[in-house]
Image 1 (tube, rainbow, N blue to C red):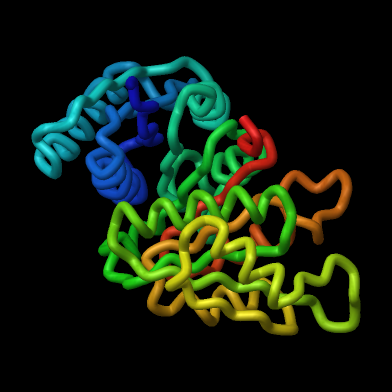
Image 2: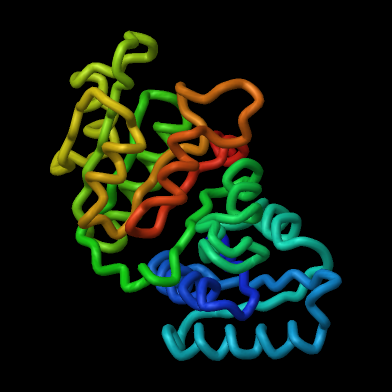
Amino acid sequence: MKHRPVVVGIDGSPAADAAIKWGTTEAAALRSPLHLVYAVTAGNPPSQAGEVVYKAVAQARGLKPGITIDSRIEAGSPSAALVKASGSAAVVVIGSRGLGVMIGALVGSTGLDLAANARCPVVVVRPDLSSMAGTRVVIGYDGSPAGDSALDFGIEHARRHDLAVRVVAAQPTGTELHRITEEELREAVHARGAQEAELIHITGHPAEHLLRLSSDAALIVLGARGRGGFAGMLIGSVSQTVLHHADCPVAIIPAAAIGG
């Protein structure tokens, strides 16, 4: 069986170095090839691209000498190149700074575009938090298709990396809309064979609880838009808040990746 590749967006920045580290580790765990993608825009001459790609391949090879590595230089924006690559990928990985991000912003337009449009899960890694020292995967669940996909991805990731699982169902205060019961939460998690998972059913702002409960996380996983999303928004406010403030890598399941 041919394994879908782990795609990493590179641009020579420290953020990209962190993404390469995370993506290489994940490719080895999945026994998948690693695809490194560099987008050439007007501001990035091809000669610079060649040097960036060479160094990225050398970094990945040094981390996991046995994996298959493919590199490519694409014309156009990083968003377009990575959305295109996501169609055949297991996961796309980027750093939270770099790939065109403005100074002062943790997650730039490339990350938000991918979270909205990629056809596979997207992992965003902060360069200052790339040690992967956490001991658990924290999953946000709300009973939506996006939440179900987040459960699938998060539980499988935890199994591959021998991490504990914590599933958080947070009900916004003052509404009964789309309330998930404790029994529904338990059934959803246990149906995926994760009987040992820690289940947290709580009232309050979902993003606030996910961030608070991620202090010992190796990864946070959530859908780009769950039941609380507003029509017309590319990704929900919970996803954006967690992407900007999490103390660990964040995996977002885009709507286009669900059921694919």
